[in-house]
Image 1 (cartoon, rainbow, N blue to C red):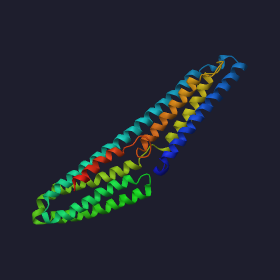
Image 2 (cartoon, helix red, strand yellow):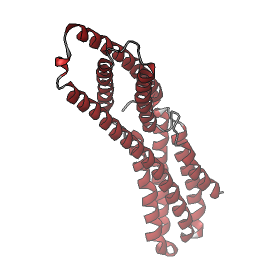
Image 3 (cartoon, helix red, strand yellow):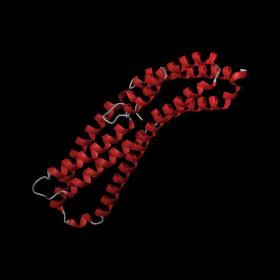
Length: 262
C-alpha cells in the first residue's frame, strides 16, 4: 500500500477524515430525510430497506475480510521472524560439523549476519536504510555460502555437506519471505472502497434517523467511532512496526540467538 515511512501519518489522517466525514454524512442524511418527510409520504421509502441492508452488509463484509487479511499478515510476519531465529540457530549449531580450521571465520560472518538482520528492521520506518541493510545481509549470505561450500569440499568436511548446506538454504530463503511480507499490504483500492462505503452507509443511516426531534449523539458517535477505529486497527496491523500494534518484541528471539553466539 503506502510507503512505510508515511504509513503511520496516513493511517491517522485517513481515520480522522473518515470519522469527521461520517459525522458530516450522518447530519446531511438526517436533513435530507427531514426534507423528504415534509414533501411526500413514506411511499418513496418502498424498497429502500433492502438497498440499505445490502449496503450495510457489504460494508460489514468488507471490514471483516480486510481485518482478517491484515491480522493474517501480522501473524504471518511473527511466524516468519520465529522461523528465521530457528533457522539461524540450527545453522549455527551445524557449524560444529565443519573442520575446526574453517569454523572461526564462518562464526564471525554469522555474527555479522545476525547483526545485519536485526539492524535492517531496527532502521524502519526509514525504508531506504532498511533496504540498504538487507542488501548488506545478502552480501554476507554470499560470503557465508562460499566459505561453507569450500569447507564442505575438504576431506574432513564432506560429511557436513547435506546438513550444513540444507540449514544454510533454509536460513537464506527465509530472508526473501520476510522481505516480501514487509512489502505486502492490502491494495489501496480496498481502503478507498471501504471509506466510500462507510460514508454512504453514514448518509443512509442519517436518513433513517430523520424525523426525531433531537439528535441521538450516542448513535452518531458510536457509529462513527466504531467504524473509524476499526479501520485504524486494520491499518495499524498492516504496519506493525510503526503504530500502536507492534511486532518488535518478536525480534528478541533473534537477539537471543545473537547472544548465544558469544
